[in-house]
Image (cartoon, rainbow, N blue to C red; front, side, top):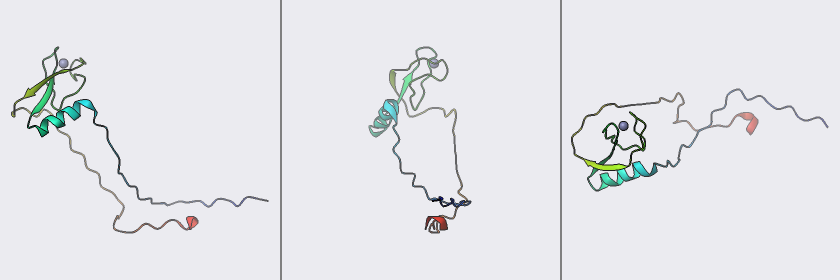
Length: 103
Ligand SMILES: [Zn+2]
């Protein structure tokens, strides 16, 4: 018995639910808990004396492991910022209809 040939699907739009969990790690967890206690925490680099806030495990300037926690004051200098946006070309107000070969 010959198999039925597959139909070619050329245009399929599938809605995706992006619900997911993100593990923040111990450094960011401690930082966020500190914010809840009205404290801003960073970690001091013993090599270059920089204090990244939010804290990181590795110094971005000299690659040293950072583990000396310090509370910093409310003033500081923002060195970098990043903003990202994404625009969907799909009209999300419409309901999704599966392609005819799926029905
Ligand atoms: Zn450093």
